[in-house]
Length: 354
Image 1 (cartoon, rainbow, N blue to C red):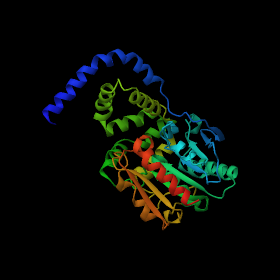
Image 2: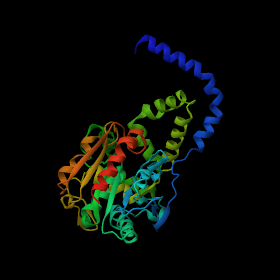
Image 3: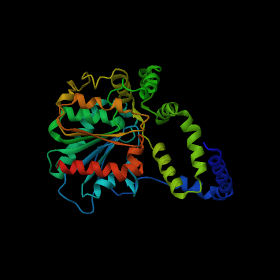
Image 4: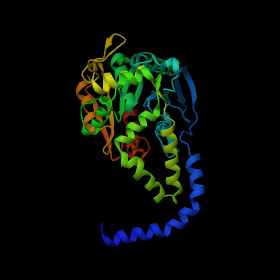
């Protein structure tokens, strides 16, 4: 860095320090009080631990509904991060009814729930509820992050119920990409079978430790320093508070689901190899014939591009596209660029296909 620029930045920080110290108590309260998820919704289907949320547009149209299956390791509130940065809101603005699968927090009696339950029971019932309520044969189905394998498996088993398939930050090929190597190493370095036998529901903090190991400096040093550096910026503090609330709200994972996700998908890569079986049925990716759109982050450090694009070679559709944005994994939901350029494109793409 240019010495003059460095001097200017240091001087700026020194001048702002007294102001930040004076504002610290208020900003701490603001940080603690900020919450994502302001758009009202109704719960239209519930089978513990899963609930299906319905968001109703102010000016409804006859558009095909969007069903979003969010990552089962996080709370879906990030999809409604703030009024200006809401994935749900982008669709509602177009008059499209939005349904969000809230996987919920499992209890001790849910330890036996696995991939088959989540795909052929919960997700199937959610889509069935939407089809019945909206009077439509098929839906726009959107999967995000760890729920993408579930959504893809559902689309392969029930292709006639999926009008389009949108995959956001999708981990598909778990043997592709150096950025996935640490996850594979962590998974192989511990006995996931034993963890599943110890816990009825694997606690979220264990998953957070894994994420922190993926980017230790970012989690322990860079992020806190960034917050301090912009403590006198109320909009930034508000956004950080919403992120913290979202991170802390992540659900636990049923023991069997954890064991199968780590063993069958992460370690053995059975989905992309067409070797995954759910309820006695083999998942054949070539059965997916719905138009498919990948939404990728150029700076995604959790799911690299090379772990996502192999799906396009495996599925049977002849209509597939990629929207790639200059942001990271979480940024696909909350970054300004995602809402300025990305989600309007996704909404247009869906509208063109009914």
